[in-house]
Image (cartoon, rainbow, N blue to C red; front, side):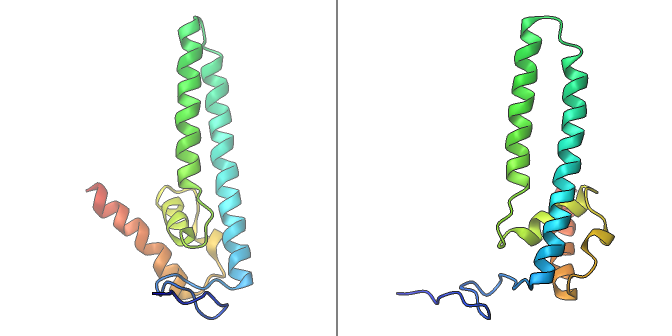
Length: 125
């Protein structure tokens, strides 16, 4: 059994959205800005934690914290096109992005992006 090839008009999976060049640029700019803000927050928190290191064990606690945060950030900021709408939805849910950051995306993309935060709120309840 063979699967259909992806073309600009058709993806192999029907539920994958097709992103125009301008939409990709908008999404990428929002994605990059959110990642930059989160990394800046992490650097500030790391500096604060480092300033309180008083014994060798504190050093390893900081290393463990940074390892966990790196893994979390790598999972969250998955730039693959098939995951992009979920990533943007999560960033909206976490208030790392605002509606203005996504201005210019088509309505169907925004509906799809907004469905992920609703799922997360329902799942958290």
